[in-house]
Length: 448
Image (tube, rainbow, N blue to C red; front, side, top):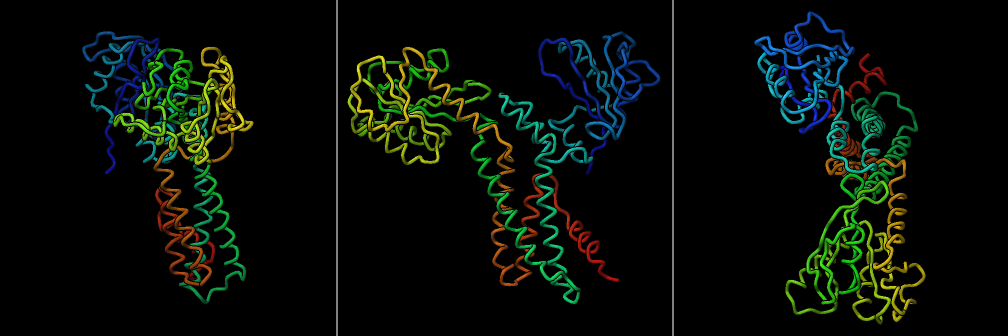
C-alpha cells in the first residue's frame, strides 16, 4: 500500500559547508513550508528568500525556499527545499520544525522510491542515482550519467517491443488460427530473435570487460619472491604500504589498495611471491591467493628480475599468464639498472624494461592506455549484478525459444518469450500481460 505521509530528510552530507538542504515531499510540504516561513504563498520553481521561524516564533535562519509543484518534481509530489546556511545544527533545527508540523523522517532511498512509484524514474535510473552518489572516478560518473539520461531504458524498451511483437503474433497463431497473418511473419520473428541474441551477448561481454568502472579495475602484481612487487606497489601508491626485504616470502598474503591513474580508479593487488615449492603452510595459502588474484584481475603485471637467471619459478609465472589469455598482461623486466642476466628471449618482444628504484612511468602509462581503451566506448554497460542477472536470464530464454520456433511448438516458444519479457523488464519496470493484449487487439483488430 502506498504511504502518502509527508516525508523529510537532510539532503546534504554531514559536516561544515556553505549550504545545507532540507527536503520535504508530500501533500503537506507546501503548508509546512508556509508555516515555518510565515508566508502566504510560494511561487513554483522560484527561489524565495525568507526568514525561517520555530513554532514558538523565534527566528532560526534566513534561507531560500524552492517549491516544486506536483507532478513537476523529482518524486511527482509537492516538494519544498529549505536551503539554509551550512552546518548540522541549523539543518537539524529546521528538520525538527518540519517534524513538529506533521511530517515524518524519510526512510533510506524513500525519495527515489516515490519517484519510481509515481512513474518519474524507472529501476535502472534509481540504481544509477544510488551509485552516482558513491562514484569515485570520472569513468563511473560518465557511465552512470548515461543511465540517468535513459540509455539503458531505451535499450530495454527496444527489446521489450520486439518481444511483445513476437508474443502477440504467436498468441494470435495459437488462439486465432483462422486469422490471415503475413506469410513471412515467422521469418521476421526468427530474424528479430537473432538480433536480440546478438545485442544481449554483446552487452554481457562489454559489461564483463568494464565492470571495474564502478568499483575500480583490478590490477594484480605477480612474480617470484624478491622480484620487486612490493617496491612497485609502494611506488604506485607513493607511500610504503608493503614491507620490502631481501628475505624471500616477506609478503605472505595479498595486499589490496586503491589508486587513481588518469581518470580511472584501480585496485592494486600485491601478491605473495609464487615459487615452485614451499614447506611454509602460511606461504602456501598466500600463493593460492596469488593465483586467485590473477583470475579476478582485469590487468596482470608480471615482474621478472633482470639481474637473475630465468628459473623454474619464472617459468611458472609465464605458464600462469599464458593460461590467463583473456586478461591484459604486462610483462615487466625489473631491476634494469643492474647488469642483464635474465634471458629476455623467453619474454618475447612485448615487455617493459623498468627499475622501481627510478621511474615506473612506463607501467603507469601502459595501464592508463589499456583502461582508456576499455572505457572509451559507446557499448551498453550494465552497472549491477541484478542487471547482469536479468540480461543473462533473458538470453537463456531467447536461446531456449529458438528450437520450439523452428519445430512449430508455439506454446513452448510463447512460454520462453514470456519469461524473457519478465526478465528484461525487471531492469526497468515489471512486465504486465495487458501490454501483450494491447498489441494483439490493436494490431490485428480481433473480436470484430
